Image 1 (spheres, one colour):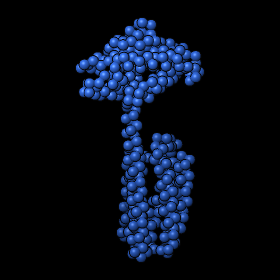
Image 2 (tube, one colour):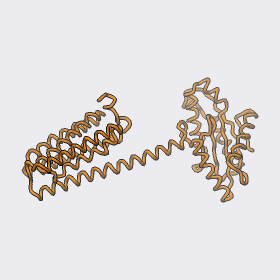
Image 3 (cartoon, rainbow, N blue to C red):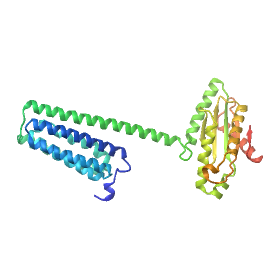
Length: 347
């Protein structure tokens, strides 16, 4: 096993390894209970095996905490394989110690490549069948009473059932979290954390439909940073990105909670103002323009920087599409730039 193989999962599956670490504590607690049970059942070999098992799970827990996942994995595998074999050989198949071998199936799927997981599953199946064959043809070395055997079986079944349930809920939460993250990434601009163009287009179409249905006004603002190329050329693209990030936050502060804002292009932002006519929209645009022009950029960027905006806005007309509405706002924006920039124009 290479060092790269040993560290697989340390960074890409941190949640799984944290769950594995917690499972070590659960398993150690179960083995402590088994120590007492087998002392009572007069099976000293299995009783003291559980002491060794507790120590192995303790070391595995420590290894997981130090991100030595390969070492922890070997300790857990060794403990379960040997413990299952000893339990079956000493007190029989009906003890249910073979249930614990099934716990490896989801772990193999998560921690290995498909090819290695298939090989490991085949070996696990052969081991499982081998133990069954031993139990079938050879009587247990230290048999216990039938009621005690049933009790041990139910105890093992309960533990494995509980741990499978825990893992099942963990996987459901993990998948749900991953879906939410993917949806967020698919709809959010990575730099500004605003809506991206595709998602904002969908939201704007919905707002236009609502505005037409209820005969409500809707105004759109198209905002562009003046001379943004010069900001990049003089201060560098890193500072340019910081300007975009701070600008997005500042614009958001000037809007209502239900207003929509997204990054439309490189240095362009699109704002959708539901239930807002052109006059009110012009006031909002002017408030944004003034807030940006008066903002002290040196407090965040450590640079003496002047940032201004040009804004074009348009109000939704009867039976007007989003494309036509944006085109009119774009013409208004062009008029603002032609007139000297740092101004608001409505069309």
